[in-house]
Length: 281
Image (cartoon, rainbow, N blue to C red; front, side, top):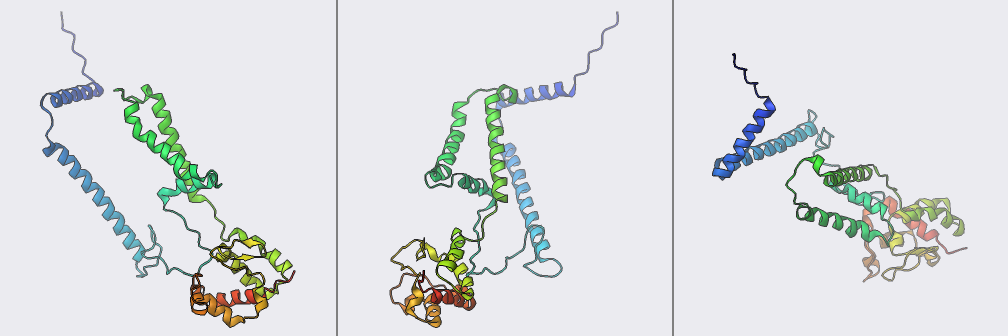
């Protein structure tokens, strides 16, 4: 009677058998750090360094380009950004991309009573759960189907982080402060001329109301005076410009910071607005 030929093992069976032999060998003899772990770490380090060098070369080459302009926007951005404008009033600071999720989280918990949750509460709770996960789940089973709670938690975390990061990256910010909404009221109640309106908008967006008050807007800090009727003192346009450029030079001991970075044109606009503010209602 002819012998029945043995069925050739499948690739999956061979892989399982090889892995079983590997685990038995490791359990019996162990694996020395050299060359096994050291070889793996060396290869991975070379891969990481190669990727970094490659990205740096692409960034440098595409930014510099054939026109040799370091401000040219290449594939990964320009080599250098344009010079910053220290007198800007429309700059909206934004975090790096890996903090976008926290950036948008603060937009959700934006009220003073709840901002603690966005800055400390939620991130701290998530970090504590992440640190405690190995101590809470000590099962040996690694199959995803056997760990539904862990898998659902991981998927929800990844999805929530991704959504918050995307929302933070695409969030639109107002280029002017909320005080600018009061400018039409100022013009009406204070009878400001048309020539004073550019300075009024600049006063609202340059942060002046952080210390000064004007027609009920802003807050008085560090003893800063109300400027609603500053024009009634008839100090003059040039005096206002000099004071804005260097407050401590005109008024020794003044805690007001200098605003020379705004430039002469914008300082004149502010001076015209201040001189036009007579406090008339």
